[in-house]
Length: 375
Ligand code: COA
Image (cartoon, rainbow, N blue to C red):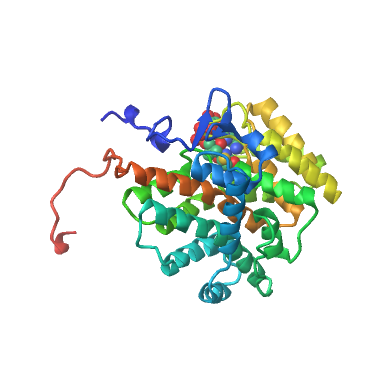
């Protein structure tokens, strides 16, 4: 095969069909089950969006109430998992902690070996409910604090603050967080979703698929970018330094985190919504530094490189302003994306073909094994 036929990074390759979401290159836009993501973010709660991704349609009031009830009832994690989390090495990255915790949930789940569609949905619900509890337990263990029990009377977003900090912030902060969860929930055949589908294609279970997907999401070219963005903003420190700092990156032909996208080359439809909510967080917290630096970087990147920000660019400072430690940012992405991953796991399993691409060999020509004395 000529090397020019190889699609490195699978660029432009359409690997399968999906009815979960549509990523539109031409308009730089995204729909979940047909609804524009920015409209869902403004008008629906994350739970409604999770229901939509899993059931194909938005819930009515009774369906939403049942969904919320089921999710709230499954939030507690086992004493054994609490114990394991308490023994994780201090300073380990929370993404490694949640990857291990999800793998452990697979050991414990009563239906791990049942890959029927009904059992997979039940397992998906347990993962959705328990992942925030595990993330928060590790976060608190790292600070020497005891875990907090989930509060079933709180919605998904408010409960996450409760689990991490023992209090729920003002409604506009909870709304901004809820919006970020909706915007992060699903995104076509991105690297972690494709990983989940690849694992599912071997007929492995959903815990195996999600554990692998979390591994894929960790990298700074994927979900890890939201953390890298905040490290970058802190390194720059003040708006006055932003221009020189960026020039330094250009001089070294280095990446600027939170910019660029494999699919969206002319802007990402999720960014204006999240930027508005990040601006709101800056206003509520009375600290405009990060959004001011962001504004300068976005303007210069567009003017000089014609590269637009992606969703990780505004979520980084938004989460920081909400009070989350930087290593928590990508685990929050996990707490949201479990919805999209699960929808893809079920979709892959429902019409499965083992995912197994080819490679073009470029190593040594075939040769004879020499005796050890002759090597
Ligand atoms: N900073 C500086 N230059 C960038 C850039 C960035 N963030 N993103 C892309 N570019 C440049 C590339 O260097 C390349 O330039 P060249 O043609 O002179 O070599 C050009 O834009 C095309 O980019 P390419 O690397 O082909 O895009 P890709 O589709 O392979 O990669 C990303 C997409 C997301 C991996 C890439 O944009 C990136 O690394 N961004 C930073 C990490 C990030 O924010 N990830 C979150 C993704 S949602």
